[in-house]
Amino acid sequence: MRLKYRLRTRTTRELVKLAQSGVKEAADFIVEQFYPMVVKIAGQYYGQWSDQDDLIQNGLVGLIKAIYYYKEDKSTFSTFAWKSVDSEMKSFLTYLNRRKHKILTDSLKVDLLLEEESEDKSPDIGYEPALIDEYLYEDLMSAISSVLNEDEFELFKMYMQDESYKEIADRIGKNTKYVDNTIQKIKRKIKPVIETHKMIRKIVADIERM
Image 1: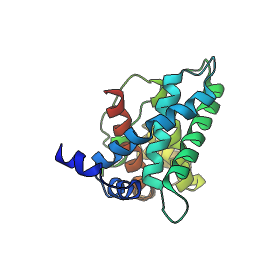
Image 2: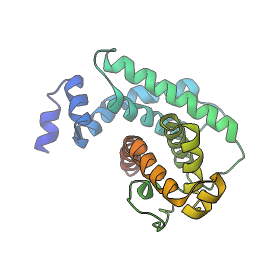
Image 3: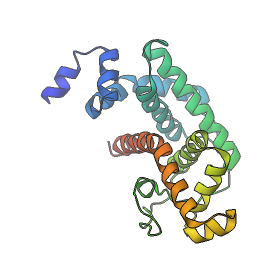
């Protein structure tokens, strides 16, 4: 309670810096402050096939991204956050339009990606593919593809489909040592993406429980 009171005396810029340094309460406080802005933007896009609650929830994803990606030399946080929320909602609506009646069944295996395993894989972290989960999964894969080259991303997709190192090696015409080295390289490259994604999912989950 004392921390929350102290946070109320901080400027938005200070709160963002605290959130970026790992103070979750600061991120929560920013979300609380800018929630009305998210609702306002959602009102501009509400339609027959886009549930307002889903739009708001997705807008909060954009707000959370804004918190962790903001650089104060670019613009004010309010401007940056508005653009981030608006862009996220547009991407979400594009996704909805593309999927419409298609239900994805992918399971996120985020924890698996950061482990230093070889052939042995941990079980999937299964859950019902709620709409926001589906969107975040696609968003994650898009972010991962942006930091990997084409060959690495193709190998990564084989790995995520639970193909063994030998199966992957046979498919790409390499040995298992090459596959192992490449997987470890991929993990290092995508680690920041995964950690940001996990942070976003955690905050979204906390918001859902409110």
